[in-house]
Length: 152
Image (cartoon, rainbow, N blue to C red; front, side, top):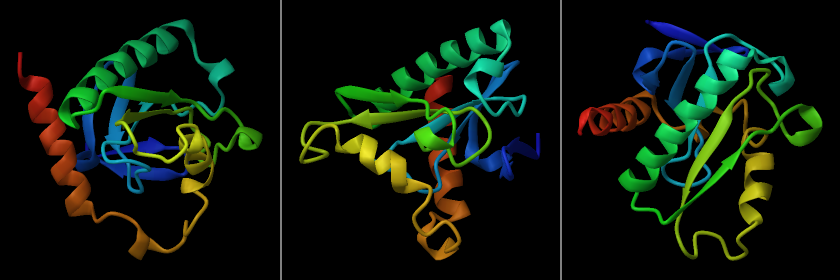
């Protein structure tokens, strides 16, 4: 695996920390909170309704595994797990993906503000790469998460 397709983007293997038969998980170039990661089906499917039953099962079992990992790794005590399914729901990448955000007490003044941030995080400064995390930062986080996955 040198790259994976994520909608209109090509994702370098260095940003991917888990791949199953039908899904993959990657670090986020513009995380809303530390540890905000994405879980996607390998097949580029635009809408949730278009997933096959085996893809859906793998996507959610992978999401559960990733959620447990990031909650522990980022010392969180809760999670926000979300899918923006369609443009009106805030989806900007035409590839189903699950946002997994480790949450801590007080990370937002109003708890539900996380959804406002999710809504706008991909749209703000989309074409200004200087606002994105570097490939090195993303690769380091993905490497840390891969190491954690290998632990019993």
